[in-house]
Length: 153
Image 1: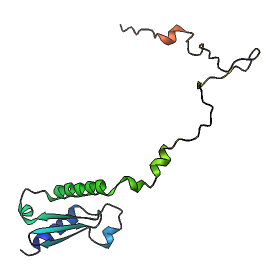
Image 2 (image 1 turned 120 degrees about the vertical axis):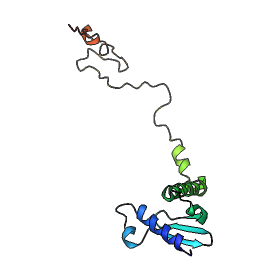
Image 3 (image 1 turned 90 degrees about the vertical axis):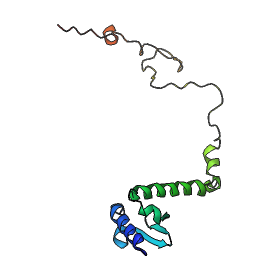
Image 4 (image 1 turned 180 degrees about the vertical axis):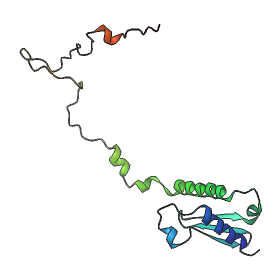
């Protein structure tokens, strides 16, 4: 059969898994190139920059879905590359800058942060800023809290 299996596989892969839309490589060259080496077909993907090998015995299997098989193999290869190529030294000191302690600008001690509280404009005398009034949280009308029941006749 010669390189017939590689040529057919290359043609089918390029037709069914082309470059993503808007990619310039689709005009320049085909995405896949396949070469047969003895009983193995080597698939080179120009878009993902991966190389996948498949045996001719698997290609002869009528039930093989080569698109799904290729997607699974490419995902497996890319996941392995991510695990092996990244290490802590690649961060080049970024962890230290992220987790370094910044100098405290506020004095140490207990602080209370109050949001959405405004001191009165017409205050009598001096008011303590830490005084919190509860009347804003207490509803004045009970009808706002308990709705009227709906009666259906």
